Image 1: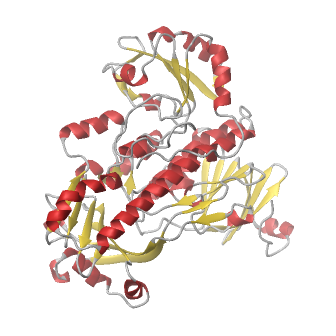
Image 2: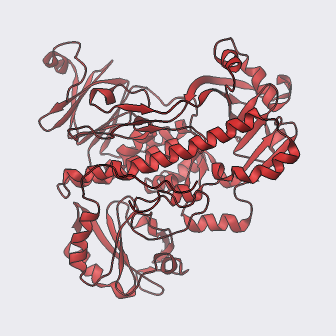
Image 3: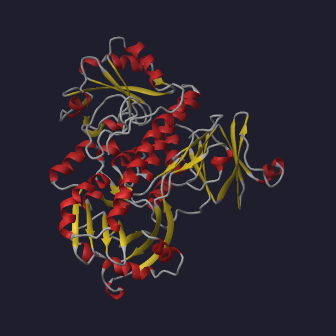
Length: 567
């Protein structure tokens, strides 16, 4: 594997650079790269992150963190800080359409429309979604980096080359750095330069349009109080776009306007634009009536889906994640969430291989599992974008709109997509976008159920944070013997948890575990370190069943075609 030609002889360049050794080098210190460093360090993998920026961008970009990603942040111990830095989605669980913020309301969609609906969501996960901007998430992940993870800022990765033991990344900057590692994870974003140099060829769908983002502060409470919403879609003659809640407590907002015609392309991107006037038109009030109005930053960008022909280099040493592997329209909010979940899937597999407990072919399962999820999210986001574009281009009749508002639900209410996606090759990736149905079948996220342990409440999702977990019932005590005999599985810790209604260790006080896991006799559910079910083991020959379970993940071959499922 060869990269760009260095500007000076390699020996001289290295003599002037800091040389750092690691197990994994991560290129890119955005949410995906930082999450990868956290997850890898949690498995004891020495990780170095290279990031060109000296601090997170001030522009919010992604804003919604869904329940599954919040579960992963909970495992890192930062979920409470993320919630404090953002806005609980249950406080803004509404989507509003209006002519202006201060104008006529055309319709509204409640994502959590009752106390019962909120209770059901709370029963499906130990955490609820939150609105917290990407730059704040990045800052929190940096502040809480563990000991085995190191972030080097102000350096740009310029060259990636093959070495006898792995890879070498050369980064330029005020203090040039060379990192020698076994593997590299490219989390360099959409425009990163290294993927092409290692043969990871980009693909792209036809762009769906260009958007203008205006990040601003203002006190909008006179027009939002009593109808707090995650999004306010604006439809008038001057602005047709969406006002995005970033942090109403601090008066922080995004106004996002797509160019719907060639004239608007010229208006928004080729002329001097009065961004204050656009904000005034969206709110429906003059600037002097909007307290604290201040524009912070503006950007324009092209909306569409991109991907890679392969997520792993031919020699196997380089893997892509997050926006470096896939991008899709923001309509659904799955970009940052999908990237962080990529990192979670990949981290334990790298740890297993680096420990010597699993063959290198285990890493092939990363793309086999994550690509179909990313492609489903891309297709769903594209459909959402086209649906909203058609709406923004139409005449919004209030009576007609109120009758059809429910058809927009899959765009905004997607618990089935965020918690119910499956890695099982013989199933659709997502069965139902809106409705989540807990199941402990192989390939699915192991369902959440609250348990009591010596008076403390823990979730079943806590039982496999850093290793594999065997979850079983009263008749499955044999699995504890197996775990004691085999304390590691594929190079990572293996534990067994006997869960009963009235046992001395873990108690299923509500019956939710028994209901959702549906275990029979000595049967056990083997949960992977990323929280997905590897296998259901009948318990007839436990030791043999555990050995055979390895083959369910450690296989080689191309990414299989997957059924799309309804959306």
